[in-house]
Length: 225
Image (tube, rainbow, N blue to C red):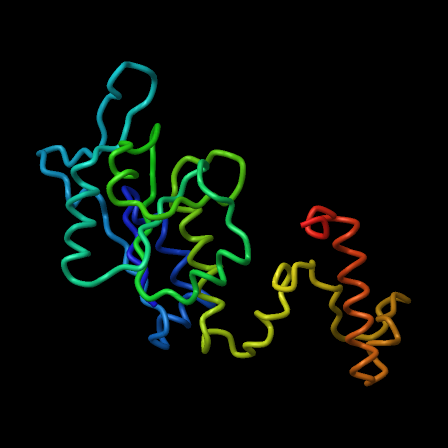
C-alpha cells in the first residue's frame, strides 16, 4: 500500500515513519510512505503556499495552486483510491474506517495548516475527510501519522502475530480485556488464576466477560451502538 502525504512541514513526519512497526512495514516492502513538501510546488520566489482570506478575517489560508499541482502530478503517475484531507470537520477515525482503508492500494493524504485550506481543494480533489477527534491541532501532520499507523498495522504481513491486530480494542466493538505477563505474583499482586489454568475455552470466556465489563464502565456508548 502506498501513502503520498502532502505537507508544508515534512520534517514533522520523519520520526513517526522511521521507527517500530511503520519502519518494518516499509523495509518489508508492504507499505510505501512518501512525504511531499508542498513548497516544492509553489510557483513564486518566496515558495509561499498561503495567502490572506477573501472577505477578511484572521489567519492565512493555504492556496489551491500548490496542492493542485502536486495532486495532479501524482495522479498522472498512478491511480489513487482516496484523497484524504485531515480535518476536524471530517468523520471521526475509528477502527471500522481503519479496517476499510487497509484494503486500499494508493492513498493521498493532505495536511492542512494555518487557518485552513482553500475550499476548492476540498471540492475538486478530496474524496474523504477524516478527523482524529473533536479538537484542533496546529496542522494535519500528526493526524496523518495517526491515520497511517492505524492503517498499516492492519495490512497482512506487517505484524509478526497477525492475530494480535484482530484482538485489539474496538475490533469486536468492545475494549480489550486486561493483559498480564510474568511474574505471576508481584509483591502479592497476582495474575488471575484463570489465566494460569491452561483451559483455553474458560480463558476466552473470562476475557470476553472482562472486555464487556470494561466497555460498560469506560465506553458504554459502544454497547449502545
